Amino acid sequence: MVMPTPETYENALSHVRTFSSPSELRITDIRFADIAGAPMHCSLVKVYTNQGLVGFGEVRDGADKAYALLLKSRLLGENPCQIDKLFRRIKQFGGHARQGGGVSGIEVALWDLAGKAYGVPVYQMLGGKFRDRIRMYCDTDVSGKDTGTRMGHALKERMEKGYTFLKMDLGIQQLLHEPGALSAPLGFLEEMAERSKAWYESRRNGALSDLERRTLRSRHYDIFNIAHPFTGIHVTDKGLDLLEQYVAEVRAVIGPEVPLAIDHFGHIGLEDCIKLGRRIDKYHLAWMEDMIPWQYTEQYARLSRAVTTPICTGEDIYLKENFRPLLEAGGVSVIHPDVLTAGGILETKKIGDMAQEYGVAMAIHMAESPIGCLAAVHAAAATENFLALEYHSVDIEWWDDMIVGKLPKPLVENGFITVPDAPGLGIEELNDEVIARHLHPDIPGLWEPTDDWNDYWSNDRLWS
Image 1 (spheres, rainbow, N blue to C red):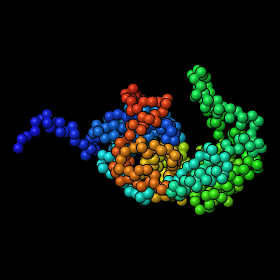
Image 2: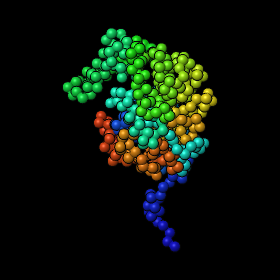
Image 3: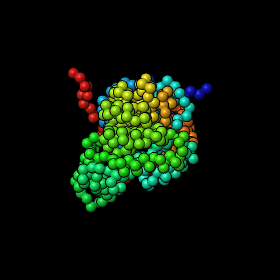
Image 4: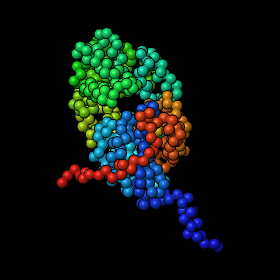
C-alpha cells in the first residue's frame, strides 16, 4: 500500500465537499445581483461560506440592497446555522414595507445555508409540513383590461392553466377618466396624474439634470404618499355603479365558484371603502386587500364590522408583534405577510401560528423571483392555517430559468408548487447566464465584491 504524500492528500481534499461540518461553518462574503422584470426589480443575494456552501436570499421587490449591505459587517465570521441568534442581532435594522427587505432576505439565505449544511429541507427544520403542494393564487393586474368582461376572460385563461384561486385589481384608477365618478379637491387628481407622468417620462429624458430628476421623484413621492384619510378623494354613486358593474361582469365570465380576491382600491378613506365593500359583498369575494393603511387598527375593525367580505392586509408589516393589534381588534379575516418584509421564513410561520389562535387564515404576498417564492413555499408548507400564495410572474417566460435544482419545470404546475425535499430551499445553483440577460439597466453588476461594507460597525446596543 502506497501512503499518500502531503501534496496528493491536499489535492484530494480540495475536491471534497466538507458540508458535514456545520459547527465550523462561517460566513465569508455577501454579494448581490439586481434583476428587472421578474416581475419587479429584485436584489438577489448570495451568502458565501468557508466550506463552499452558498445560501440564496432576496431583498423585497422594489427595495434597495443597501438594507442588506449594512448587515454584512455584523455577519462576517458568524455561523449561519445560528439563525435565531443572528436574526435577533440584525432585526433592529429592519422596518416596515421595503425597509424589512434586507433583514428578511438575509434570514432566508441563512435558512438555505443551514438546510444545506445539515442536508434537510427548510420546512423540516420548521417542524415538518402540513401539505405537499402549495396553492398559488394568480394575480392579474388591470392594465389593458378596461372592462370587467375583458378582465373576466383574462382570469378565465388563468383557470384554464389550472389556477384555482384568483386575484384582480379594482379601484379608483379605473375611474380617473370617467366624468363624475370621483370627487376630490379641484385640480388634485389632475396634479397626481401630471406628477406621475412627469416622473416616469423623466427616466427616459436624458436632457434633465440630476437635480431636476431628483426633484420630480420627490414631488411624485410626496403626492402619492398622502395616506387615504387625508386625500379628500371620494367615490360618487356613479363611480360605485361602475366598479360594481366591473365585478359583476368578471363574475359573469368566471362563474361564482372560484375564489376571487381584490386589491389596489386607491387612496380613499374608510367610509368610501365601506360603501364600496357593501356594493360588492354580493359577489362573495375571497377578500378585499389593503383598503386602508395597515397602521389604522381601529379603522380596520370598523371596516370588518361594516361589510361581510373578508378583510385582508399585512404585506407591509414587519415582525410578528406588529400583526397582533390587528388580530386583537378583529380587523382582519385573512393576514397577508410577505416573507421578504415580515422578517423572513421563521417570522412568517410565527405570524401564521399567532393568527390561527384568533381564527384568522394566512395567505402570503409574493411578487419576487423563485428565491423569494421558494422561501414562501417552505413557510407555507409548515404553517397549518395557510390559504394561498401569490404568484405574479405567470407571464414571465424566463422566471424559473433563474434557478437550478431537482425541481419541477415549470416550477408552478397546474396552479400549485410541489414542496421540494432537497436541502435548504431546494435551489442548487443560480443560472448566471439568465440573470445576466435580465440585470437592472441602472444596476448592472453581477455578484460584484462588496468589500467596502466589511467593516461598517457602530455601538448598536439599544440600551445602556
